[in-house]
Image (cartoon, rainbow, N blue to C red; front, side, top):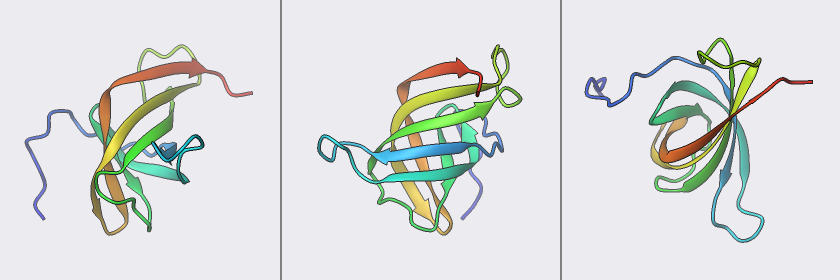
Length: 110
């Protein structure tokens, strides 16, 4: 597969922890995964996993980025809550496209 050069957003090689939960599976939702990103951009991220979710799966994501990864954050870390869907899967992981709306919350770990 060739490298795509027509991306809308620049991709950054950021390794960040994330909690991914399948959305829409009853009141408690679906399975929850704790994964690391391989890379990240404003439109989505690639997550390392040996068991990717099926393409099209809707997910809720809690992503934690360090202040070194994001400019203009007045705390040690940023907590980003967003949703999206699995866009593609491949050996070693899955690409998730983020929805347009998301919340960025600053916090200092205790």
